[in-house]
Length: 421
Image 1: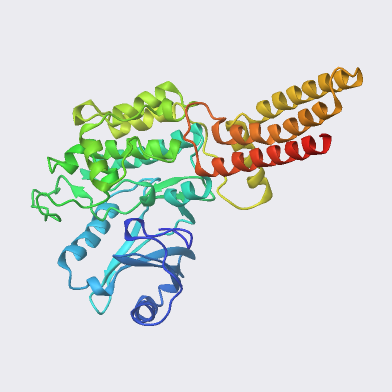
Image 2 (image 1 turned 90 degrees about the horizontal axis):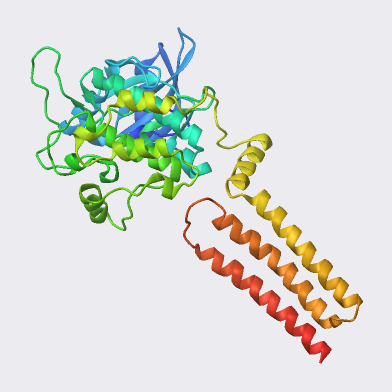
Protein backbone atom coordinates (compact mmCIF):
# COMPACT_ATOMS: atom_id res chain seq x y z
CA UNK A 1 0.00 0.00 0.00
CA UNK A 2 1.05 3.63 -0.08
CA UNK A 3 3.01 5.88 2.20
CA UNK A 4 2.00 9.05 4.01
CA UNK A 5 1.86 10.73 0.63
CA UNK A 6 -0.92 8.57 -0.79
CA UNK A 7 -4.20 7.10 0.25
CA UNK A 8 -5.79 3.71 0.26
CA UNK A 9 -7.02 3.74 -3.31
CA UNK A 10 -10.79 4.14 -3.60
CA UNK A 11 -11.11 4.52 0.15
CA UNK A 12 -10.33 8.18 -0.03
CA UNK A 13 -7.50 10.60 0.65
CA UNK A 14 -5.20 10.94 3.59
CA UNK A 15 -6.86 11.80 6.84
CA UNK A 16 -5.86 14.57 9.18
CA UNK A 17 -3.84 14.04 12.31
CA UNK A 18 -5.37 11.72 14.87
CA UNK A 19 -7.58 13.57 17.24
CA UNK A 20 -8.90 11.03 19.70
CA UNK A 21 -11.98 8.86 19.64
CA UNK A 22 -12.59 5.68 17.62
CA UNK A 23 -9.51 6.19 15.43
CA UNK A 24 -7.22 6.16 18.47
CA UNK A 25 -9.03 3.13 19.89
CA UNK A 26 -8.61 1.27 16.60
CA UNK A 27 -4.90 2.08 16.47
CA UNK A 28 -4.46 0.88 20.06
CA UNK A 29 -6.33 -2.32 19.23
CA UNK A 30 -4.11 -2.93 16.20
CA UNK A 31 -0.96 -2.38 18.23
CA UNK A 32 -2.08 -4.89 20.85
CA UNK A 33 -3.41 -7.61 18.60
CA UNK A 34 -0.88 -7.52 15.76
CA UNK A 35 2.12 -7.59 18.12
CA UNK A 36 4.68 -9.08 18.27
CA UNK A 37 4.76 -9.92 14.54
CA UNK A 38 3.85 -6.40 13.51
CA UNK A 39 4.78 -3.09 15.11
CA UNK A 40 2.09 -0.58 14.14
CA UNK A 41 3.73 2.83 13.74
CA UNK A 42 1.01 5.31 12.78
CA UNK A 43 -2.00 5.92 10.59
CA UNK A 44 -1.03 7.16 7.15
CA UNK A 45 -4.39 7.38 5.34
CA UNK A 46 -8.08 7.42 6.13
CA UNK A 47 -11.02 7.16 3.76
CA UNK A 48 -14.74 6.55 3.72
CA UNK A 49 -14.40 2.76 3.93
CA UNK A 50 -11.08 2.06 5.62
CA UNK A 51 -7.97 3.38 7.33
CA UNK A 52 -4.40 2.48 6.44
CA UNK A 53 -1.60 2.16 8.99
CA UNK A 54 2.13 1.97 8.50
CA UNK A 55 3.65 -1.01 10.30
CA UNK A 56 6.96 -2.85 10.56
CA UNK A 57 7.16 -6.60 10.10
CA UNK A 58 9.81 -7.39 12.71
CA UNK A 59 10.85 -10.86 11.57
CA UNK A 60 11.42 -9.86 7.92
CA UNK A 61 12.50 -6.31 8.84
CA UNK A 62 10.29 -4.64 6.24
CA UNK A 63 7.62 -1.96 6.24
CA UNK A 64 4.07 -2.98 5.39
CA UNK A 65 0.68 -1.31 5.25
CA UNK A 66 -2.29 -2.52 7.28
CA UNK A 67 -5.71 -1.67 5.86
CA UNK A 68 -8.64 -1.96 8.29
CA UNK A 69 -12.35 -1.60 7.58
CA UNK A 70 -13.84 1.48 9.25
CA UNK A 71 -15.53 0.57 12.57
CA UNK A 72 -18.75 2.34 11.55
CA UNK A 73 -19.11 -0.19 8.69
CA UNK A 74 -18.68 -3.24 10.93
CA UNK A 75 -22.36 -4.19 10.53
CA UNK A 76 -22.58 -3.26 6.83
CA UNK A 77 -22.60 -6.63 5.08
CA UNK A 78 -22.01 -5.12 1.63
CA UNK A 79 -19.02 -3.09 2.84
CA UNK A 80 -17.52 -6.19 4.47
CA UNK A 81 -18.00 -8.18 1.27
CA UNK A 82 -16.27 -5.50 -0.78
CA UNK A 83 -13.39 -5.33 1.66
CA UNK A 84 -13.00 -9.09 1.57
CA UNK A 85 -13.36 -9.06 -2.21
CA UNK A 86 -10.32 -6.78 -2.39
CA UNK A 87 -8.27 -9.24 -0.36
CA UNK A 88 -9.58 -12.20 -2.36
CA UNK A 89 -8.92 -10.63 -5.76
CA UNK A 90 -5.52 -9.10 -4.92
CA UNK A 91 -4.23 -12.20 -3.11
CA UNK A 92 -4.86 -14.34 -6.18
CA UNK A 93 -2.64 -12.08 -8.29
CA UNK A 94 1.14 -11.96 -8.37
CA UNK A 95 2.44 -9.23 -10.64
CA UNK A 96 5.14 -6.53 -10.30
CA UNK A 97 2.58 -3.80 -11.05
CA UNK A 98 -0.12 -4.92 -8.59
CA UNK A 99 0.03 -4.11 -4.88
CA UNK A 100 0.70 -7.44 -3.17
CA UNK A 101 -1.33 -8.91 -0.30
CA UNK A 102 0.75 -10.56 2.45
CA UNK A 103 -2.04 -11.85 4.69
CA UNK A 104 -5.55 -11.14 5.96
CA UNK A 105 -7.21 -11.48 9.32
CA UNK A 106 -9.84 -10.24 11.77
CA UNK A 107 -9.47 -8.27 14.96
CA UNK A 108 -11.18 -9.27 18.20
CA UNK A 109 -14.03 -6.88 17.35
CA UNK A 110 -14.49 -8.84 14.09
CA UNK A 111 -13.17 -6.02 11.87
CA UNK A 112 -11.31 -7.47 8.85
CA UNK A 113 -7.84 -6.22 8.00
CA UNK A 114 -5.34 -6.72 5.19
CA UNK A 115 -1.56 -6.68 5.55
CA UNK A 116 -0.21 -5.53 2.21
CA UNK A 117 2.80 -4.20 0.35
CA UNK A 118 3.99 -0.76 1.42
CA UNK A 119 4.61 1.52 -1.56
CA UNK A 120 6.51 4.70 -0.81
CA UNK A 121 5.12 7.22 -3.21
CA UNK A 122 1.92 8.89 -4.35
CA UNK A 123 -1.17 8.08 -6.32
CA UNK A 124 -1.19 9.16 -9.96
CA UNK A 125 -3.96 11.56 -9.01
CA UNK A 126 -1.56 13.31 -6.63
CA UNK A 127 1.24 13.21 -9.22
CA UNK A 128 -0.99 14.93 -11.79
CA UNK A 129 -2.01 17.55 -9.25
CA UNK A 130 1.64 18.20 -8.35
CA UNK A 131 3.21 18.39 -11.82
CA UNK A 132 0.45 18.40 -14.42
CA UNK A 133 0.29 16.13 -17.48
CA UNK A 134 3.18 13.73 -18.06
CA UNK A 135 5.45 13.66 -21.07
CA UNK A 136 4.22 11.36 -23.83
CA UNK A 137 7.04 8.91 -23.07
CA UNK A 138 6.28 8.78 -19.33
CA UNK A 139 2.54 8.47 -19.96
CA UNK A 140 3.07 5.54 -22.35
CA UNK A 141 5.34 3.77 -19.87
CA UNK A 142 2.99 4.21 -16.91
CA UNK A 143 -0.09 3.21 -18.90
CA UNK A 144 1.74 0.19 -20.31
CA UNK A 145 2.56 -0.98 -16.77
CA UNK A 146 -1.00 -0.49 -15.54
CA UNK A 147 -2.33 -2.27 -18.64
CA UNK A 148 0.00 -5.21 -17.94
CA UNK A 149 -1.38 -5.39 -14.39
CA UNK A 150 -4.96 -5.31 -15.70
CA UNK A 151 -4.12 -8.04 -18.24
CA UNK A 152 -2.81 -10.23 -15.41
CA UNK A 153 -6.09 -9.73 -13.54
CA UNK A 154 -8.09 -10.57 -16.66
CA UNK A 155 -6.19 -13.83 -17.03
CA UNK A 156 -7.52 -14.78 -13.58
CA UNK A 157 -11.07 -13.82 -14.56
CA UNK A 158 -11.02 -10.58 -12.54
CA UNK A 159 -12.35 -7.25 -13.84
CA UNK A 160 -11.15 -4.32 -11.72
CA UNK A 161 -14.08 -1.95 -12.51
CA UNK A 162 -12.51 1.09 -10.83
CA UNK A 163 -9.35 2.02 -12.76
CA UNK A 164 -8.55 5.70 -12.23
CA UNK A 165 -5.55 7.84 -11.14
CA UNK A 166 -6.50 7.58 -7.46
CA UNK A 167 -6.20 3.79 -7.59
CA UNK A 168 -2.75 3.66 -9.19
CA UNK A 169 0.33 4.18 -7.03
CA UNK A 170 3.63 5.59 -8.29
CA UNK A 171 6.68 4.28 -6.44
CA UNK A 172 9.31 6.99 -5.95
CA UNK A 173 12.45 4.83 -5.91
CA UNK A 174 11.74 2.44 -8.79
CA UNK A 175 9.44 4.57 -10.92
CA UNK A 176 6.93 1.70 -11.09
CA UNK A 177 3.18 2.16 -11.37
CA UNK A 178 1.18 -0.28 -9.22
CA UNK A 179 -2.54 -0.96 -9.49
CA UNK A 180 -4.42 -1.12 -6.18
CA UNK A 181 -7.93 -1.29 -4.71
CA UNK A 182 -9.82 -4.29 -6.08
CA UNK A 183 -12.67 -3.55 -3.66
CA UNK A 184 -15.41 -3.51 -6.30
CA UNK A 185 -13.76 -5.97 -8.67
CA UNK A 186 -15.98 -8.45 -10.47
CA UNK A 187 -14.78 -12.05 -10.42
CA UNK A 188 -16.11 -13.55 -13.63
CA UNK A 189 -15.15 -17.11 -12.78
CA UNK A 190 -15.40 -18.69 -9.35
CA UNK A 191 -12.71 -21.33 -9.94
CA UNK A 192 -14.74 -24.20 -8.46
CA UNK A 193 -18.07 -23.73 -10.14
CA UNK A 194 -19.56 -21.98 -7.12
CA UNK A 195 -21.64 -18.86 -7.12
CA UNK A 196 -19.82 -15.57 -6.55
CA UNK A 197 -21.93 -13.23 -4.37
CA UNK A 198 -23.22 -10.13 -6.13
CA UNK A 199 -21.99 -6.89 -4.59
CA UNK A 200 -24.32 -4.58 -6.46
CA UNK A 201 -27.99 -4.45 -7.27
CA UNK A 202 -29.13 -4.41 -10.88
CA UNK A 203 -28.84 -0.87 -12.22
CA UNK A 204 -26.74 0.32 -9.28
CA UNK A 205 -23.63 2.33 -10.17
CA UNK A 206 -20.59 1.64 -8.01
CA UNK A 207 -17.45 3.66 -8.63
CA UNK A 208 -16.77 6.94 -10.38
CA UNK A 209 -19.04 7.52 -13.43
CA UNK A 210 -16.27 9.59 -14.95
CA UNK A 211 -14.25 6.38 -15.43
CA UNK A 212 -17.03 3.97 -16.42
CA UNK A 213 -17.59 2.36 -19.79
CA UNK A 214 -20.88 2.87 -21.70
CA UNK A 215 -21.97 -0.73 -20.97
CA UNK A 216 -21.13 -0.28 -17.28
CA UNK A 217 -23.27 2.87 -17.13
CA UNK A 218 -26.14 1.12 -18.95
CA UNK A 219 -26.05 -1.87 -16.60
CA UNK A 220 -25.19 -4.29 -19.38
CA UNK A 221 -23.02 -7.40 -19.17
CA UNK A 222 -19.60 -6.63 -17.75
CA UNK A 223 -16.48 -7.85 -19.56
CA UNK A 224 -12.74 -7.20 -19.54
CA UNK A 225 -13.32 -4.55 -22.22
CA UNK A 226 -14.82 -2.27 -19.57
CA UNK A 227 -11.41 -2.03 -17.93
CA UNK A 228 -9.82 -1.26 -21.30
CA UNK A 229 -12.22 1.68 -21.69
CA UNK A 230 -11.09 2.95 -18.27
CA UNK A 231 -7.45 2.54 -19.35
CA UNK A 232 -8.20 4.77 -22.33
CA UNK A 233 -9.65 7.41 -20.01
CA UNK A 234 -6.59 7.10 -17.77
CA UNK A 235 -4.34 7.58 -20.80
CA UNK A 236 -6.11 10.81 -21.77
CA UNK A 237 -5.72 12.15 -18.23
CA UNK A 238 -2.02 11.27 -18.05
CA UNK A 239 -1.35 13.02 -21.35
CA UNK A 240 -3.66 16.04 -21.10
CA UNK A 241 -4.62 16.36 -17.44
CA UNK A 242 -8.29 16.01 -18.43
CA UNK A 243 -10.64 13.56 -20.04
CA UNK A 244 -11.76 13.09 -23.65
CA UNK A 245 -15.18 14.68 -23.12
CA UNK A 246 -16.39 18.17 -22.19
CA UNK A 247 -18.99 17.91 -19.41
CA UNK A 248 -20.14 20.32 -16.71
CA UNK A 249 -22.11 17.84 -14.61
CA UNK A 250 -22.26 14.14 -13.77
CA UNK A 251 -25.33 13.76 -16.00
CA UNK A 252 -23.52 15.34 -18.97
CA UNK A 253 -20.51 13.11 -18.35
CA UNK A 254 -22.65 9.96 -18.36
CA UNK A 255 -24.34 11.10 -21.58
CA UNK A 256 -20.96 11.79 -23.18
CA UNK A 257 -19.65 8.31 -22.34
CA UNK A 258 -22.72 6.71 -23.85
CA UNK A 259 -23.28 8.89 -26.93
CA UNK A 260 -20.39 11.21 -27.80
CA UNK A 261 -17.20 10.49 -29.71
CA UNK A 262 -14.02 11.31 -27.76
CA UNK A 263 -11.93 14.30 -28.78
CA UNK A 264 -8.80 13.28 -30.67
CA UNK A 265 -5.79 13.13 -28.38
CA UNK A 266 -3.57 14.86 -30.96
CA UNK A 267 -5.97 17.81 -30.95
CA UNK A 268 -5.61 18.15 -27.18
CA UNK A 269 -1.85 17.55 -27.12
CA UNK A 270 -0.06 18.53 -30.33
CA UNK A 271 3.16 16.62 -29.60
CA UNK A 272 1.32 13.32 -29.12
CA UNK A 273 2.30 10.50 -31.48
CA UNK A 274 -0.64 9.91 -33.89
CA UNK A 275 -0.28 6.16 -33.28
CA UNK A 276 -0.67 6.64 -29.51
CA UNK A 277 -3.69 8.87 -30.16
CA UNK A 278 -5.25 6.21 -32.39
CA UNK A 279 -4.72 3.48 -29.77
CA UNK A 280 -6.33 5.61 -27.04
CA UNK A 281 -9.32 6.33 -29.28
CA UNK A 282 -9.70 2.59 -29.97
CA UNK A 283 -9.85 1.97 -26.23
CA UNK A 284 -12.82 4.36 -26.06
CA UNK A 285 -14.84 2.66 -28.79
CA UNK A 286 -18.52 2.46 -27.79
CA UNK A 287 -18.65 -1.19 -28.86
CA UNK A 288 -16.59 -3.40 -26.47
CA UNK A 289 -15.62 -5.70 -29.35
CA UNK A 290 -13.77 -2.87 -31.11
CA UNK A 291 -11.40 -2.22 -28.19
CA UNK A 292 -7.98 -3.87 -27.88
CA UNK A 293 -7.25 -6.24 -25.00
CA UNK A 294 -5.31 -4.95 -22.00
CA UNK A 295 -2.39 -7.19 -22.99
CA UNK A 296 -2.35 -5.80 -26.54
CA UNK A 297 -2.56 -2.24 -25.21
CA UNK A 298 0.40 -2.82 -22.90
CA UNK A 299 2.45 -4.23 -25.77
CA UNK A 300 1.55 -1.39 -28.14
CA UNK A 301 2.45 1.28 -25.60
CA UNK A 302 5.66 -0.43 -24.49
CA UNK A 303 7.04 0.03 -27.98
CA UNK A 304 6.79 3.80 -27.58
CA UNK A 305 8.23 4.07 -24.06
CA UNK A 306 11.80 4.03 -22.77
CA UNK A 307 13.40 2.24 -19.83
CA UNK A 308 11.96 2.84 -16.37
CA UNK A 309 13.38 6.12 -15.12
CA UNK A 310 11.48 7.78 -12.26
CA UNK A 311 10.17 11.15 -13.38
CA UNK A 312 10.46 14.02 -10.88
CA UNK A 313 7.36 14.85 -8.84
CA UNK A 314 8.68 17.36 -6.34
CA UNK A 315 11.72 17.97 -4.24
CA UNK A 316 15.26 19.14 -4.88
CA UNK A 317 16.56 21.90 -7.12
CA UNK A 318 17.64 19.51 -9.90
CA UNK A 319 14.13 18.10 -10.22
CA UNK A 320 12.65 21.61 -10.13
CA UNK A 321 15.00 22.84 -12.87
CA UNK A 322 14.21 19.78 -14.99
CA UNK A 323 10.46 20.30 -14.69
CA UNK A 324 10.77 24.03 -15.40
CA UNK A 325 12.91 23.47 -18.48
CA UNK A 326 10.49 20.82 -19.71
CA UNK A 327 7.55 23.20 -19.38
CA UNK A 328 9.45 26.04 -21.06
CA UNK A 329 10.48 23.79 -23.94
CA UNK A 330 6.95 22.41 -24.29
CA UNK A 331 5.67 25.97 -24.75
CA UNK A 332 8.51 26.78 -27.19
CA UNK A 333 9.59 29.60 -24.88
CA UNK A 334 13.32 29.54 -25.85
CA UNK A 335 12.48 29.99 -29.55
CA UNK A 336 9.81 32.64 -28.92
CA UNK A 337 12.06 34.54 -26.50
CA UNK A 338 14.94 34.56 -28.97
CA UNK A 339 12.70 35.70 -31.83
CA UNK A 340 11.08 38.42 -29.69
CA UNK A 341 14.46 39.72 -28.52
CA UNK A 342 15.73 39.82 -32.11
CA UNK A 343 12.68 41.74 -33.36
CA UNK A 344 12.81 44.15 -30.39
CA UNK A 345 16.53 44.82 -30.95
CA UNK A 346 15.92 45.43 -34.67
CA UNK A 347 13.05 47.87 -34.03
CA UNK A 348 15.10 49.83 -31.49
CA UNK A 349 18.11 49.97 -33.83
CA UNK A 350 15.97 51.36 -36.67
CA UNK A 351 14.29 53.88 -34.34
CA UNK A 352 17.69 54.97 -32.98
CA UNK A 353 19.05 55.59 -36.49
CA UNK A 354 15.95 57.56 -37.47
CA UNK A 355 16.17 59.64 -34.27
CA UNK A 356 19.90 60.37 -34.84
CA UNK A 357 19.13 61.65 -38.34
CA UNK A 358 16.28 63.80 -37.01
CA UNK A 359 13.84 61.87 -39.20
CA UNK A 360 11.99 60.72 -36.08
CA UNK A 361 11.31 63.17 -33.24
CA UNK A 362 12.65 62.25 -29.81
CA UNK A 363 9.14 61.80 -28.40
CA UNK A 364 8.37 59.20 -31.06
CA UNK A 365 11.54 57.29 -30.12
CA UNK A 366 10.44 57.27 -26.49
CA UNK A 367 7.00 55.96 -27.48
CA UNK A 368 8.62 53.16 -29.50
CA UNK A 369 10.84 52.32 -26.53
CA UNK A 370 7.80 52.08 -24.21
CA UNK A 371 5.95 49.90 -26.73
CA UNK A 372 8.93 47.51 -26.98
CA UNK A 373 9.46 47.33 -23.19
CA UNK A 374 5.78 46.48 -22.54
CA UNK A 375 5.41 44.40 -25.69
CA UNK A 376 8.12 41.90 -24.77
CA UNK A 377 6.39 40.65 -21.56
CA UNK A 378 3.07 40.65 -23.44
CA UNK A 379 4.49 38.33 -26.11
CA UNK A 380 6.11 36.06 -23.51
CA UNK A 381 2.86 35.92 -21.53
CA UNK A 382 1.01 34.83 -24.63
CA UNK A 383 3.70 32.24 -25.33
CA UNK A 384 3.41 30.76 -21.84
CA UNK A 385 -0.33 30.29 -22.14
CA UNK A 386 -0.56 29.47 -25.87
CA UNK A 387 2.91 28.32 -26.94
CA UNK A 388 2.00 24.63 -26.94
CA UNK A 389 1.05 22.98 -30.18
CA UNK A 390 -2.69 22.75 -30.61
CA UNK A 391 -5.40 25.09 -29.41
CA UNK A 392 -5.48 26.22 -25.78
CA UNK A 393 -8.27 27.96 -23.90
CA UNK A 394 -7.93 31.58 -22.81
CA UNK A 395 -7.37 31.68 -19.04
CA UNK A 396 -8.90 34.35 -16.81
CA UNK A 397 -5.50 35.38 -15.45
CA UNK A 398 -4.46 36.34 -18.99
CA UNK A 399 -7.05 39.13 -19.02
CA UNK A 400 -5.49 40.55 -15.87
CA UNK A 401 -1.92 40.26 -17.14
CA UNK A 402 -2.59 41.70 -20.59
CA UNK A 403 -4.85 44.36 -19.09
CA UNK A 404 -2.14 45.39 -16.63
CA UNK A 405 0.50 45.63 -19.36
CA UNK A 406 -1.88 47.65 -21.54
CA UNK A 407 -2.55 50.07 -18.69
CA UNK A 408 1.18 50.53 -18.07
CA UNK A 409 1.77 51.17 -21.77
CA UNK A 410 -1.08 53.69 -22.00
CA UNK A 411 -0.13 55.48 -18.76
CA UNK A 412 3.56 55.88 -19.62
CA UNK A 413 2.80 56.86 -23.24
CA UNK A 414 0.27 59.47 -22.06
CA UNK A 415 2.81 60.89 -19.59
CA UNK A 416 5.44 61.20 -22.34
CA UNK A 417 2.98 62.97 -24.68
CA UNK A 418 1.82 65.35 -21.95
CA UNK A 419 5.40 66.38 -21.18
CA UNK A 420 6.12 66.86 -24.86
CA UNK A 421 3.04 69.03 -25.37
